[in-house]
Length: 387
Ligand SMILES: *Cc1c(COP(=O)(O)O)cnc(C)c1O
Image (cartoon, rainbow, N blue to C red; front, top):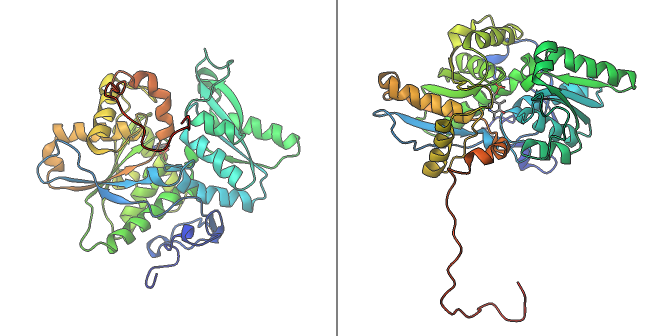
């Protein structure tokens, strides 16, 4: 790998590289940010591929490319693994023996954290938000829950009402206090892994994209488009894009709170890194919430199905599906804004959450039939075996 910086040479290429702790050195354009992480754990399969995405009905001359952060690992898939590389290194450095984190009942972040914790031999405690009707019942094994429960994460359920009243920070504090009383050493990761330390994960992705561009003559991107759920991903992308040579415009589509909330939240994250920048200058945030977090219109689900059938890319209806839906809607409403642009869409993962939508998707899913075996057919692979 002559000429390629050591930080880029894939840790997974080397035996023992994956899941190892390595010293962290930031990209040259980010050395003024502070605090600076000292180490990371290699948890993801990076770099993730970038390829052309032939979406239907694009404005004239517009190109969409896709960065496949959904391919960042199997159980760890999606954007959260990039944040966890930094957060887990901090947890281990602080001598933690267990991790606490919080999310919705199908949180991809909680699933990725549960897996990462077990990779590093730590216990994991998840506080999951569900409806009042379901909070006293077995949450089942659908989607992310199956993986969380297979890796032995401890699950505490709270209702949406309790979550709304108490908030994620006090809920995590309460569990932390109980674990401390038992003599444990808990480390709390906030919702979505979105604090200033986690933001480094998506500052780092900009270095990755820069290097992928360098290796492909004349490549460049005008825009980066991504879903926003807790804010860390857009904070890192927007800060990195501004500071680096990339200078692509970052467009976020929010799937839960309003844009104003996220401008403030991102401001807090980038202030926490002493960036001196204003969130309004580095990212543009649009509302793509629709019916509400993790809720979908029939049209959104049909969009996810149509894109899968047209391009083979399976979006998740909670995040990237809403972001891509919002992007294409904006393109058809404002074609001049997007005409001739070269766009990089970041697929942030979430495939496991799709299983929770199976009932709603059933009427849209592809067909099947009983195989026609009417002709007389003789066996070709030997006899006497039942199968
Ligand atoms: C969490 C998540 C997002 C949003 O990222 P944030 O950093 O929380 O804004 C997007 N897509 C998927 C699949 C996610 O799990």
